[in-house]
Amino acid sequence: MTVNANSLDAYWMPFTGNRQFKAHPRMIVGADGMYFKTSDGRDLLDGIAGLWCCSAGHNRPRIVEAIRQQVGELDYAPAFQMGHPKQFELANRLTQLIPGDLNKVFFTNSGSESVETALKMAIAYHRARGEGHRTRLIGREKGYHGVNFGGMSVGGMPANRKMFGSLVSGVDHLRHTHGIAENRFSKGLPLHGAERADDLQRLCELHDPSTIAAVIVEPLAGSAGVILPPVGYLKRLREICDQHGILLIFDEVITGFGRLGAPFAVDKFGVEPDMVTTAKALTNGVIPMGAVFVQDKIYDAFMQGPENMVEFFHGYTYSGNPMACAAALGALDTYEEEGLLTRASELSDYWQVALHSLRDLPHVIDLRNMGLIAGIELEPLPGQPTKRAFDAFLKAYEAGLLIRTTGDTIALSPPLIIEKSQIDFIFDTLTNIIKTLD
Ligand SMILES: Cc1ncc(COP(=O)(O)O)c(C=O)c1O
Image: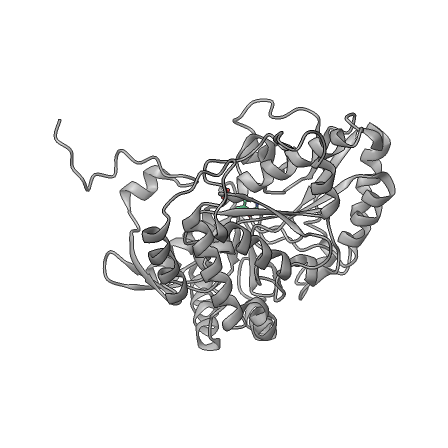
């Protein structure tokens, strides 16, 4: 058999319409700063930081150099029963960055793995302290927590669940916080809907709180179309968890590392969960890596029994991989030197005004924003859900702008190095495109 290296047949692409793509390929061959380079030689403004991960933009010298040096010095070290200095350095740097008691870090290789790790930790934590009856996990409708079985089960996006059987048992879901008519076109946090957190109380009454291990939510949900927490919602969730001894997990895979204008949503919303899952911008998206932050009390609960025994039977071959640690340290240096962990707060007013200039365009039924995130919800084409937004995606690509769509919502999350003129380009381009949509 002859192999055609350029054939598109063999690769099964993730979360992609494979047939559409292979008929009309969109190839990226380079990246620098705010721009991708396409195979037909065009610059594409990155309106979504890769996939919400390249927060410092592309080809950043600190990160490139850190990886180059690391690969020649120590390419791999066994993750179990052995360590290397950069794991400890990175964990120390990270715990300095996050507030409160979240002083321990467990490394993974993706957001999905961070979620699985946190869910397993939650159940094992309760068991370690003699409450092995707390096994139930609570997610939320429209939640996205990656694609592995635990994350998919606590997740609440029907298309991500329906093909995969009965999923993990003992999971229930809070009602989502989207679609509240009175919040349409909110600037920043929606004012109405905090009482939706009381849905946790309902689940406590149904299942009895003594059966519930943890609640996991995205403080701001990205994948289901940029859904912001109503004012007071997260605080209320925290209160109910405290009342019943339930752990609260924030999935900060997209909100971590400056996206909202503060290092973490924990800072932004002033609510401290028991665990925080992260990935993506941890390494600026350059090398796969995730991190789960946990409060001291969780780590401490595991530190019992003979000292030579493994305390938590969980981990990955690539947990704390040397290259990933080097990339993360390079990313943190870049974020800190350039003030990127708070830069979104400096630009968020400008971003908000630019976004809300789209309000009177045809098909636009809602606009949502916080930090350097925006959601533009379009009225679906009758009988063809997602098509109108996907058409916008294709037209934006032709016009030199990379956006992301989920359902009929356009989601934007550019690198945090974006300039005002580039914000103008994004919204001018989208204005022109939305006007031409069917
Ligand atoms: C909130 C959240 N959790 C988990 C994930 C999964 O991360 P990964 O694709 O790295 O597994 C994502 C990815 O977008 C996410 O947005």
